[in-house]
Length: 322
Image (tube, rainbow, N blue to C red):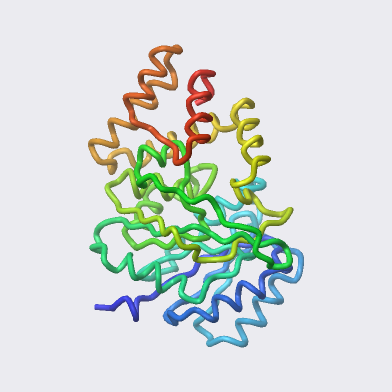
């Protein structure tokens, strides 16, 4: 039986034209104090120097340290979703890839910089969870600009992780997430083509919903680069709050919630009895008129992590945008 020091970690990096910052991220992975890792890269059809950089590091590292696979958009005849949806499909594709086997799995973006102890800190918690229980580690992040200069921290969430939160909000960024084989089994059961909006939000939902454990580390585990090509970026700034309000009023949040709920139907049998109640209560409330809708949302116990987030959610409920 492997110990946390010898546990095998599959790092799942998804990329599309990421040459600008890729080498810095690969260097930070190389510096990890936990050495039992292998990097799996799913390239979604890069046309820049991404593959050249990966080939250079593959030659530099041991032969078993880096493998590149074609992402779903790179396959001939594939109909790819764009933007964040395309990245989500890519992450779910590699997470469900039957050729990849490890004790733990870590999502990875191409433009971050990992702390040297990122994996060690995640395994310190994950190794304490029985392997048959789905487990997910995530953390806060340190924000940096294009040049790598610190510009702040991601929001500090203080409310307990749980399904009632996960249904309406993702808690930790996918770039911080490390999870065990039992969590991966849930991803594979739901399917790589489940059609959800964000892989990190999805993983949080299924782990918390199916009786798993989720841990949010308040100490940053990586530098999260903020630049124009970010899919989401930080949700810390006032402008981002206005953007979220716009997404709500335009019905985008409602679409995302609907996609997630349809995905959860694939694994509804795995939800705990308590979470089955929350799931059904919320689904029914979304279809109801104003007063029954608000009562249903209240009875389901759904919550977001911040005061502003709660305001946004209840405003959505009042406007019928959930």
